[in-house]
Image (tube, rainbow, N blue to C red; front, side, top):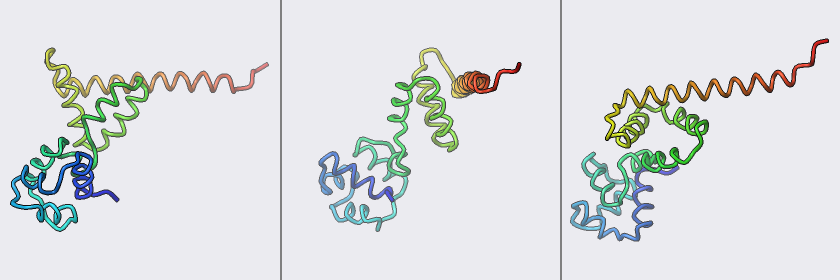
Length: 150
């Protein structure tokens, strides 16, 4: 199972960054702290998680739980409406991801001043429309499968 510590190490290696470089960027005096950290032997305060995320060009959310909300949002934007709503619905089961996703959507509409609550309503409306379309499709299929009455 991937942990925050393995995600830190994997991200560091992906960026071809040494333990020394990462230590210097986040304020540790030498690489031994990073070595202990990547082995899960060091507790991290929230401020260090944020500093490490910045140094590794990622988000604290990704380091802590493996979700890269910005990448998910970009993926969602490329999906069709139905698939987008299914994915958003799945992500929305965890409130913290819901807030982050809604915040990103609100930022996209910043010029028109859309609040998070309004974006949430937009998502709810889209989900409702998707569910209605799905129900219509199911009704059509059901009607075709039903034997004709004489």
